[in-house]
Length: 326
Image (cartoon, rainbow, N blue to C red; front, side, top):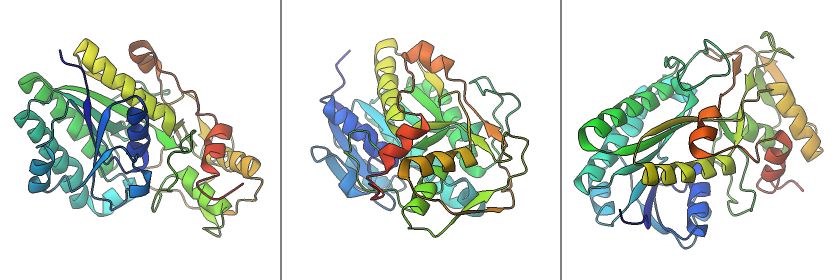
């Protein structure tokens, strides 16, 4: 089997994709970043990567893209806001489902066998037990999670029928910024807790909202499992190596196995930034489970992976420079 040299990263200018791109470049791979730059930032793409602008929904863009030779595809070019997916499901269907199938079609046409897929814990829906392992029933409570599950199911079929080998990485709450400081541009219009906390600390927002404080948890607020983006990146690269060496599919959770409440997250950010973070408590959001925590034992067993940077202090310390906080 030939060595992996050329790697395509769709959505490679985005939050997670850009971190993976930097790590792959440092490891000596030839990295091609494909992005439409609606949310991705050109400044976050490694300077030595080949940058190609285009859209996964446009067949002509992909046909041109795949005139290059690739050994593996990392796929991050998805819409990811759960609330928005309930209001604009057709956009998520076109981009997340149709766009991904467009990529897989090009892979089949060009005999590319390895696919590393950015999936999500949203495939599980309301937890029936904790921590959530990979055998937990899949019952998404939002359309975003449904699009991820549909792609996983399609990948299983394309693996059986066409021989594609895939890694589906179901991560929980991605957070933090590059420990080495290579990714400097902050995410546009974030919908996740930690960047909203940091925007409030940096006075980009006057205040933030806490959705409910009447859950049956330690302080009444929701509990989530936060995973540093550098830890996510290392898992993706280990998954690529697994596909190449084992030539078999892998589906694993990526998290820490430890949950933190919303108020604990705010308190940790206040401590690291030495700033008061203003918030107001509002009603619960529909579909928010009280607690989501991952079992990551399978990732440890199969990939030898463990989170290194996912404690709250390291997370918020890594975010300070991006938000202009000293």
